[in-house]
Length: 298
Image (cartoon, rainbow, N blue to C red; front, side, top):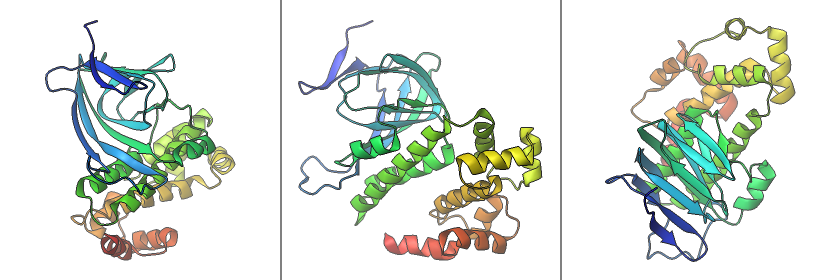
């Protein structure tokens, strides 16, 4: 390997690596400007967030990492080594850079990679990671791309625009990101039949499906599917399916260019009134009220 360049070294943590032309190309936004006071910090916050692009030949090596970062692959993929384990991280997969860990990131199989990054810090980070059981988590091969992409994009937008109250909203986003990470980790412990079912439902939220159709597609009986969902998730499979649709709807309602009718149709609802009823049942407000409330909070 070529001689590595040093990009950061504070005597405790160190980042070395190789660039290829302008790559890796970072599009990051930070919570604090270099000259901005850090006297007040939320106990959980997004330190920085954004997108970065990699090409084959790029390489980074972290020694005793000073940060906690969640990396979500949008396009392509890359190899990741941490704690002596090597992972091939593909599209819609996640890897986590842990504080104090030694890690390496490089390209093998793919020629290009686009990923979203969110670095989270604060005094509550470590106890929250421990309470969720993910303090030593390195990699999640299966994730809910719509949910994770939506959460991380919210953080990027908040840091980019920095409107009044953005730090409080970023603290909330950081908390929700870690909760979602904990949920994704729990899925790794589920029986294979349940993992397949959850993945199928999350990937089909834009379709109108019946419980019978879901079971036929999965090759599983309704009684078995109901038993697995109630045992591990505490609710019926179709209820889980609708909840995932409503989570996606909340993200889509932040886009003023989409009408409520368009959102309903994109989630498999031919009847807008029925969609609104389902949304109100789970969120305590209609889609229109939810959208207006988000506007007023900005």
